[in-house]
Image: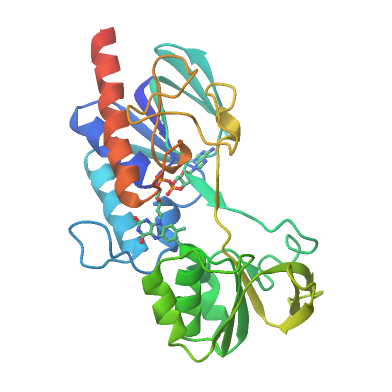
Length: 305
Ligand SMILES: Cc1cc2nc3c(=O)[nH]c(=O)nc-3n(C[C@H](O)[C@H](O)[C@H](O)COP(=O)(O)OP(=O)(O)OC[C@H]3O[C@@H](n4cnc5c(N)ncnc54)[C@H](O)[C@@H]3O)c2cc1C
């Protein structure tokens, strides 16, 4: 039996692992997909204290190396649910179940989909959710970025370095991303921002050929001949496996405050990072949560002895 099982190897989960191992607890981190979490999609991080700038991958590598060098165990598996109660939990995964005295849920969030016909079928054939991962495939080509927040604008900046043309399709009459990014984009000749418009159809059989958009104010339709479409319309939490052990808000986030104790959960379960209710979702806030959740779990373990 592990002292602490941490679900998710993003900044929150890996920070929790470092703190827990420094208190000499037996720690297992379970990750279903990308070690390092969302930040591995970011080409450049300029707001993590101590680094003037660092790629998301390098930051993730450093976090993983630090957690492992302190003795954390890491498994690649998907958590499907948690059962049990105070001091005796089963973490049920795709391949097997693990036992733990405490559990920290640090499952983060994932990219939202448009939910339109063909989106799923053309994913990997022109439709992408990660400009960092797939942008290089579209060098010299025409692409559309859907969204107008920070992720969309970061994607557009990156893509405009190598693509012939970058359309930004925003459903509102204004962009919501940082003014610094807006300023960079306003200086790029190959970027066109299309406001108050939504994607109505995507066209293509074996690969994406065009994106049809509709202006929500005028009803005017327009076809964008593009080879790539990068969907950057925000994040959704990954909390379905935990809805039976903790209370979720209307958007699916686990309800918890700064103490990282989820509302309605059995004692011994904690939550950290982007998957909980909070106003700021950043690496700093995720790592802060990782520390708070680990220290709360350590206190719980020590008090139960
Ligand atoms: C493109 C991009 C750029 C960004 N740039 C910045 C930036 O410059 N500065 C900044 O501060 N923040 C930035 N962020 C936000 C930052 O990455 C997140 O706030 C941070 O990663 C949240 O950390 P987390 O550990 O809570 O969640 P995540 O990073 O989402 O990690 C959660 C992990 O849990 C795993 N997981 C989920 N469900 C399960 C399950 N059932 N079983 C097992 N594993 C599971 C996921 O696969 C994931 O690896 C950016 C995000 C993106 C997408």
